[in-house]
Length: 313
Image 1 (cartoon, rainbow, N blue to C red):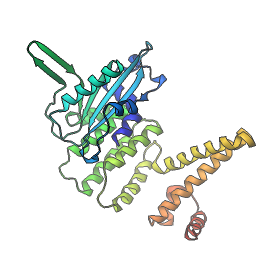
Image 2 (image 1 turned 180 degrees about the horizontal axis):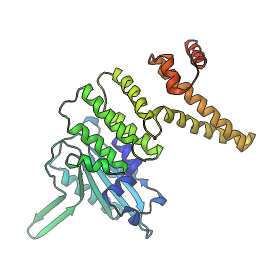
Image 3 (image 1 turned 90 degrees about the vertical axis):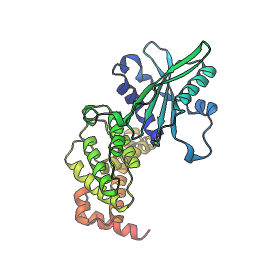
Image 4 (image 1 turned 90 degrees about the horizontal axis):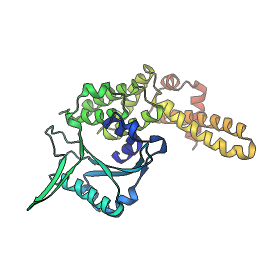
């Protein structure tokens, strides 16, 4: 979950941490993630339940053409480890020793406790001293008001985590309230469709209901929210994804049948497949035909056709 969102919006995270990031980094040249290099130095834990840190190492270019490395540590289980500063230093030391690359390092802390944590590792003995400073971002200390004001997508990620941390009652009713509130706030932002999808995936994974039936209730409420915002809703996202897949299929077909004709056919296939999957999904959740027609815009005949086809499979 954290690995995925950090890869999706690392550029936004750097802009969030450094307002002048676009003057420093050449984001047009892209970001390359160095998971293989990191695993060579730090093999993953065999016991998956003991892993409390998500580590991402990335390569990025500055506007001067220099290749720089970004190291992000994210403590994701809400329990601070007193050896964390040593871990930060060890990572820097091993990476620099092998690759001789300058590194800027960030620690994202997700524990509920608000107290300050060290942003420095110090080792000193008989006149010899090592001091290693790194950037710390502690979500529990952040202002909800300031996060809501921000137009940076990482602010919504931080707001998702903070909303759970500050809630003492974490039953399904409380989680539903949090999840819907965050969804409303997300759809009010002027993010791209891709960013909305990425953050919705994080939101959906980070806040889980104990009773899975609440997922249906959430989806129903989400559709109402979608109707009151300008941002593309979840159902349209499903259709859009299939449309894009259809376009890709159309492009491949177009090599033999004509590029323009292939792309247009692909778009038609994608839209049709997207509608079909949404209708099937809503039928399985026992939505009424009237509600399905209202949500998807299809006819009653179309719903009946899909119902008959599904029953014969």
